[in-house]
Each structure stands twice: as structure tokens, then as C-alpha cells.
Length: 178
Image: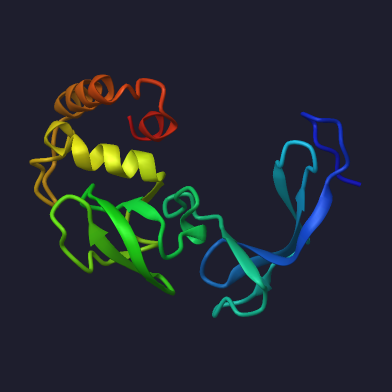
């Protein structure tokens, strides 16, 4: 039995065949459980890994590589909004395996291709994507050139200014990157 600590409710299995992928074919097979009260999810796995190099033995995989794991990236679909690795808000028009593409809300460029695993992309709400586009000239990276490094002080100043303009001082996205 699996109990949600927060709600004190028994968790129920909502998906069988979920693998915890640690990379290079190192996968622990498991089942995903969900709290019926608050929606908290856990993955209950076997104690021994299997070799699943092609990631084709489970129905779904949870990427455990923290360097490459970005919130909700595995659930991005056509019609969603993301911030791509150039910091543009993008309307997703295609998802093909690891490749994701879409139309920039900043300059209309297309296809804006990114790797779901290797690029730093973030899923955005419609409201956040539109707000970033509207306030692009105030965005901390509006004049940033891809690959350019900026010092931490400049970064922090730009982010703080943008947060105040957008009213996002407590926004979860900006807490994550600052």
C-alpha cells in the first residue's frame, strides 16, 4: 500500500509500465501511483534495472538525468507554448521524438527547432507566452546573442527589472532560473 503523506489517502495506480530512465539503457521498471485527493504522483520501481537502450520496453519513461530533465518537457504537444533555448516564446507546431518546433511569438520565425532533451526549454502558459512577447523589449535577454555569456550581476539586474514589469516577483518559472 502507498499512502500520500500530505492527504493521508491511499494512492492508486494510474499507469503501469513506466520506466525510470537513468540513461545509457539503465532503466528501472515500475508503476506510477497517484493520490486521488491532491494528485501527487510517485513511481514505484523494481530494485534491479533492466537494459533498455532503445527505450522500447516500457509504455512511458521518466527521465532521471537532472541535467537534462526540464519540467513537463515529456508532455509538450502541438498547440502548447514553450520558451526555447533562445528565450523566445514559441507556439509549438510539431513534436517528433526529441525534436520540437514552432513559431516564435517575437519575430514570427519558423521552425525554431529545439531538442527536448538537450535544449533548455520551458513549457509556458498562454498568458505567460503572450506577456513575454508583449514585453519583449524588457525581457532580460531581448538583446542576448545565442552563446553569449553574461555576468551574474547583469543577469540578476535584468531578471529583477523584468519581474517587476511583469508583476512576476513570485512566479514559479522565474524562481527556477534565478
